[in-house]
Length: 159
Image (cartoon, rainbow, N blue to C red):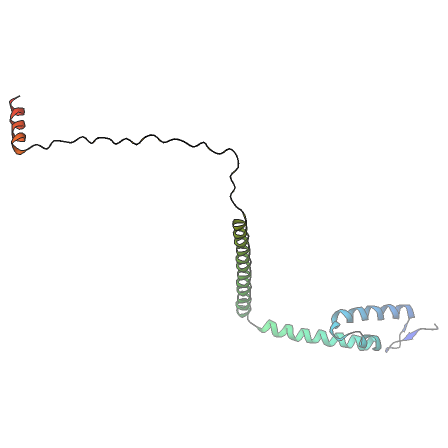
C-alpha cells in the first residue's frame, strides 16, 4: 500500500481514514479545550491533541471525586442560599420596575391634568328666578304661671 501512514504500533492506516480520525480528534479537541485557541490545534499531531484531551478529562475526574466527598447537606444549603438570593434580586428588580412604571404613569396623569382645561359645551342653562323670601311667624307658646297650671290640674281631676 503506497501512501499509507504508519502509527506507533506499526499498523498501516489508509490516508483517508487517518484524515477522518484527525478531523474527529480536532473537533473533539475544539469542544474540550476550546479556551486555548486554534493555534495549537493546527500545529499539533493527533497524538498530542489526544494527550491534551486526556489531561482535561483527568482534571475533571479529580474535581468530580472531590465534589463527591462534599456532604449533600452542605450542597443543598448552598443551593438554597443561592436560590434565595436570586429570588430576592428578582423581587427587587420587579419592585423597581413597578415603581418606575407607577412614577411614569403619575407623571403622565399630572401632565394630562395640567394640560387640559374644562370647557363647557352645549346649551347654557336658563337663569332661574328665586321665590321671594317669606319669614314665617313663630308661634309663641304661652307660658303658664304656677296658678294657671294648678287650676288646669284641678279641672282635669273633676272631669
